[in-house]
Length: 285
Image (cartoon, rainbow, N blue to C red; front, side):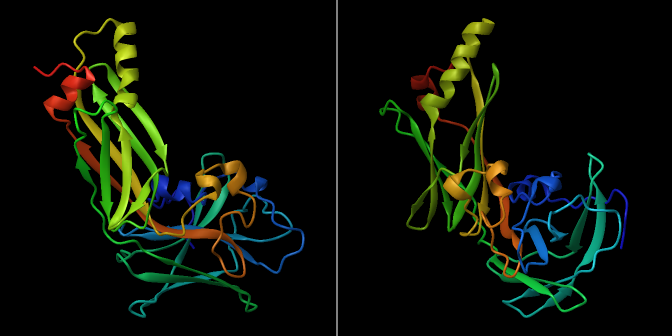
C-alpha cells in the first residue's frame, strides 16, 4: 500500500459519479445488509490510469482511517479476457479525511466491457460491470439566421448518453456560462444538444449595457459534454449529492453499494457565421 498525497487524475468525471466526495459520514447504508463494500469509480478511455474508490460497509460508513483495508480489487476486460490486479493507494483529502483509491495503469478501450471484482479475505465478494462508450467527436451545425431563436444543433455521433453539458460564450464582455445538465435528445446515429443561442447570449448584452461596453463582439463558443455509458443516468436527470448519497439511488454494484460508470470529456469550439452573429446583435467587422 502507498500512503501520502498520491492523486489519481479522475477530475470532474468521478465527482459526477460521487465517488470522491469527502462527506463519508453522511452516507448511511441500511441497518441490515449483507453488503460488504461500496464502490465508486470510472473507466475513462482518455486516461492512462483507471481508478475506483472502495469503502467497507459497516453500520455507518464512518470516516476512513489511515490503515490497510481487507480488499483485493481486480478487473477483467470481458471483451479480451485480460485480468489485472489493482493497487491500493491511501489518499488524504483536503478536509483531512482518508480514502482507499484502487488504481491500475492502463487505458480502457472504447466499446469494451469491463468487470470489477472486490474480494475480502473471508470470501465476501461484490462486482460491477460497465461498458466504455464509443469514440464520439461532436459536430456543430450553424442555426438558420432567418429563424429568430437561432437554435444551434450539436451532434455527438454514436454517443449512448451525455451528461454535464455546458456552453461557454467568450466575448469582449467576458465569459458567460450555461449549464445544460443532461439535456440531450436521442436521434438516429447519436445524441443531439440544442443550444439556445439567442436566449443564452442575452446575458452578454445585459452585462455590456451595465459595463458600458460597445460594440459587443463574440469571439467563440465552447461546447462541452461528458459522453457516458447508457446506464449513467441520475434520478430525475439531476446530480444532486443530497439524493445520490442515499444507498441504492444510483447503483450498479452487485452484492454491494455504489456506482462504476464509463465516460470521457469532449469539447468543440464553434465560431458562428457572420450572418448568425449579425442577426443576434453582435458586431462583425
